[in-house]
Image (cartoon, rainbow, N blue to C red):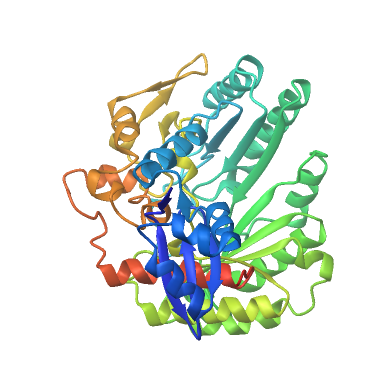
Amino acid sequence: MDYSYYNFLILKEDKMVMYNVATDGIVLLNSEIANLVEEHQKDVSKIQLIHPDLYTALVNKGMIVENAADEWNNLINKWKTEDNDSSTFYLTIYPTMNCNLHCWYCYEEHKPHTNMKPILLDRVYKFINSKVRNQQINNLFLSFFGGEPLLEFNNVVLPIMKYSRDVCAENDVNLYIDITTNGVLLSENVRNQILSLDLKNNPVFQITIDGNKEEHNKIRNTTSGFDTYDCIIKNIKGTLSSGMIVNNRFNYTRESVDSFIDVLDVYADITEKEKKLLYFDFQQVWQESSFKNIRDKAIDLALLYSRKSLQVRVEKRYNKERCRDDAENQATINYNGLVYKCTARQFKSDNNEGKLTEDGQIIWNDKYFKRMSIKYGNSFCRSCKIYPICHGGCSQTKLEADTIQGCLFGYSEKEKYDIVDGRLNYILRTKRTSY
């Protein structure tokens, strides 16, 4: 048995915390037990003799493993199993690339008349039908993105939802729908049409707020100067009251981060039932340089929201979840039938990785196969102690940094430690184990 390569010992106040970045296992150790662990890292069998209960706990937490040399392979095999899970398919649809807002940080070009035509809609139906009927999947995760997808609610979104509901019901497949929208068009009429579908699982909406009213309206603006803040908040509350889930993403910058404290007042009147349907997700605008003091402010705000019995999700930097776009069982179909994997880059024609054929099949191109071949990282990534949480970035990062031999992010050892420490701080708020 070996001491895991992914173990970290981190001092927190008067306790030494043992944390495994691969399993998220945590043990809080007093000084005596911490010394015992440190003294016998290279001969863990002695820990079993001296403190059997501790040894058992460390094995259960993944901190003592059968062979540390196999840990990377075990991790990759686990990810490969997830990536090739044929029981689930993730399908993202872009009904349009147009948008009704003009946010400075948006990476897409919002062009009018870029909406999915009936001929492409028919191909999408055939694709969904093929996946559900012929491949015997158990779960279909259907996402709508854009552009602003609700601009094409009646012409594209609602028809695809209806079709998917029917074909999934006929084949005993679970249907899960999520819609990323700016929320301006999420009116009572739209909500009622969605509810009238009588879906087994109501859709989940991701809706972004960019600060308090003043800061938000600087960013999420229209040519007419319409007050999008009040409109979006009203629609979020209407969505919650109708029983649908909202992930309220907070895109913060150096200028706006402090203003999110004001948004707390907006939700002071929601019911306990509605609180269970609402999640807050603090994410720094990625085009802005990242500074630890800004992230720390966001974390402090997230803690404040939590103390108000509101549900807060962890910042991406400290989130171990791998991008679902990396999976084999995922595709993103644009309004024009070109197919992509990553939803965080411009949908230019030369970035496509495939196309949707007339009979509803995807033909992938060389870019897709290259992505799949490099998505688990280079040799440097594989030897890094934070690989289980960093993954060397997503496959898009690897595609764009294919010639880099070292760390794709250029992380220093201090930055790596900060990432592990941030993840640990997040977990310690929810569970504690001590000796």
